[in-house]
Image 1 (tube, one colour):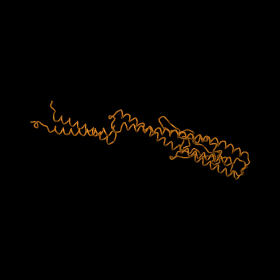
Image 2 (spheres, one colour):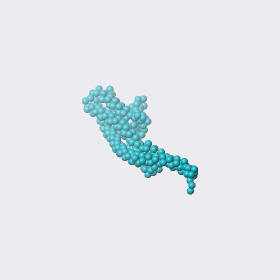
Image 3 (cartoon, helix red, strand yellow):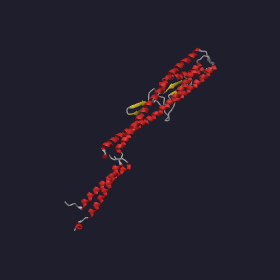
Image 4 (tube, rainbow, N blue to C red):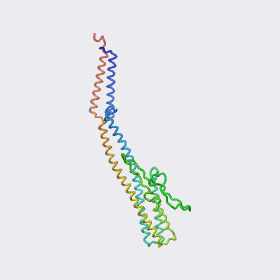
Length: 309
């Protein structure tokens, strides 16, 4: 069978083009350090790498959520620690006021301090995060959880009112794992804010110029407020403990996810990183083959009927 010059050219050109593509592929592998540039390079490894990369993306999202939740929980815990200290100070003031030896002037001074500490607690519980959200109103975060309203119609604000709810926000921090990310004023102080209102009333009572320090009603009011304060302190400590437990949980999850992420990175490297030794051998072989093909074609192209006569 005779092979025409055109057929020879086409065969040589196809061979050269194929080797050129192979050489380009190996050069790209060596430049990127990746052995798998196309799924067809290693379908099984490519599929596994895709799965691992999806898991890595999920872990990255979970860890981003954990970072945001941790910051929020730390903020809440810090604010509530301050509120707890204020409650302890008020309790000390109430115990001092209940000893029966205070003058009207000293009671007025204690009442003024209780009022100031109550205002400080309200301001703290109306704390806004960096995005302007009120963090202690349950799932209602676009308005302050505590406001003072005029409930008796005399034109003066006299009662603290809760505008939030007792529901919890949540965040996904691992596959199938959600955690509550907040505590609320309502679950600590009760939806009617009885303690805050009783402290406000007691503060005004103790600052009344006509107050009789020996009035049994005053002592009864002080004692009932102490009892109420102790109940709220228990709820507050429970809330702070809940925040701490959640932080411990997500810290453990974050550590576990970091370990999984490092393992995944190692597996992705094993599956997809290029072994430069064999790649260099392949590269050199292709270069030599292309060079030989070019020389062969050059020789063949010089042949004609007269060159063999």
